[in-house]
Image (cartoon, rainbow, N blue to C red):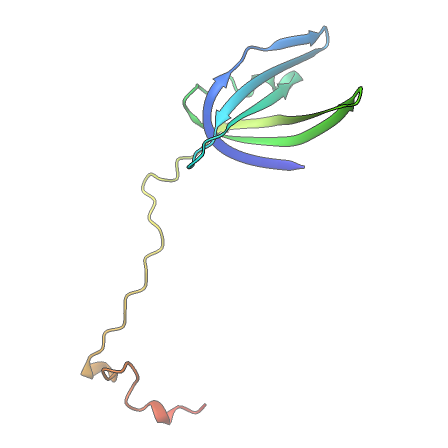
Length: 125
C-alpha cells in the first residue's frame, strides 16, 4: 500500500545502526489543519539519506508504505517512508476558478425581468 501526506518537517533524527547490516532513521512531520497531528516515519537502509536536503520547519511531501507485523503476541505498525521531497507551495499566485457572472437582464438581450426570453414558446422541445 502506498500513501502520500504533506506536512511541516518537525524533527529529524540521526541514523541508527540496528546491526552491522541494517540502519534506520526516523523523522516527524506535523499535519496542518484544525487538529495538527505529529506523525513519525521511518527510513531504512539506503533511504536514510532522502531527508538530508530538507530542513526542520519546511513543508514536505512524504510517500510511504504502511507496514505491520507480529512479534511474541504483540503487534507493531510502521510508516515506512521511501520518498521525501519539498512540497510545492500551491498558494503562491493560485487563483481558483472564476465564478460565473450572473446573467444581465436587459431588454436588449431578449430577457425579461422574469429571466426567460420573450420567444420562449418558440423552442422546438
